[in-house]
Figure (cartoon, rainbow, N blue to C red):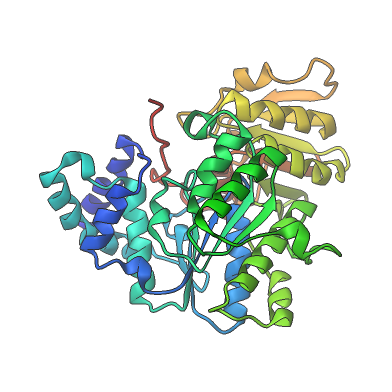
Amino acid sequence: MTPEETLRWLTGLRNLGSRLGVDRMGLLSARLGNPERAAPCIHVAGTNGKGSVCAMIEAIQRAQGRRVGLYTSPHLVAIGERIQVDRAPLSDESIVAHAEALRPHYEAIRAEDPEAAPTFFELITAAAFVEFAARRVDVTVLETGLGGRLDATNICAPEVCVITSIGLDHQEYLGPTHAAIAGEKAGIIKPGVPCAVGDVPPEAEAVIVARAQAVGAPLTFVRDRFPQGLPEVSLPGEHQRRNAGAALLACELATRLPIDDAKARAALLTVEWAGRWQSHRLADGRRLIVDGSHNEEGARVVEPLLASLASPTVVVGALGNERARPLVEVASRHAARLVLVRPDNERACSVEELAALVPAGFRGEVRRASVAELFPSPATCAAAGETLVVLGSLYLVGEVLARLRGQGLPDAWQDRLPPVR
């Protein structure tokens, strides 16, 4: 196959959707020689903050002189963002090479049992494991895709686990309550493996504690480790300090990977993570902030940052009314004007659906637009206002960042969630 044909094959798999469960991933990994066992790993789950915590752990570990493999999802612009070694993303050519190497395994498994054929997400996860093993990284940092208990990454044998937060998101897949969602996230906790826990509601905490006790896993809460104050971090917001506490605690608990505290704390002041209250300067000198807070918990933690701005213009786009409602409500409390857009995703709310969520008491301007209209060329934005904020879906964030950089729009590799059964 040509590289283009290989890419079409891999991208085409996403049309089949994702499927929860670890059996397919375990089967594929066994055929590959279990590359996930090649290096110690730190496994991170949670409703929000997973990517930021992974980026912080990566920075801490790299500051100790280690080679670090980082696996996160989804990507914003290019799929190679998901698989990084020392924060260098894989090239498209490397992704193609992995797909070509994995396809014979996929075909062999499918021929024997079509139901066991790996999904798009599982193949990308396998590519990460293979890449990290080949590069002989000293440690891998793994972010779960959805949930934890049945996530493809959960075949790992971690040094330490992290649960960053528990909020209401993906209820149709993970359950309707904080307790149900916590049960899925806590499924990454392994017997005897220490676990760091961030800020979670009481009903979620009870579930996490019960799981840890059932499997004999030591549990440490960020609030107990840092009673005198959370670590400082380069990413804005008090929620990012809580994330920094979870990251530093996780690294402290990974006893096979000792850290120097001063180097670790210095590393936290250098962390970069795209799309998390990320500030840009437009060609006309105006400030544009891009943030992927895309659910109720995200809206809540980002509100103090919005409140600190003077009459911003807020561009909002979200996937699903349950996610959109708190975002629109929070934006309406602090924006001088709202610009409603539809991210390029089949699950995205239409601008009409977003408009219906704007509170009746909002006195600012409400405008409907497309992302292309708002960001017609690199480093430009057609929206009015001195300070602009893009808020919502990570898919929206990816579109905006691609246009700001003058790159091609995000490819068709975006994740599809499993169908509701």
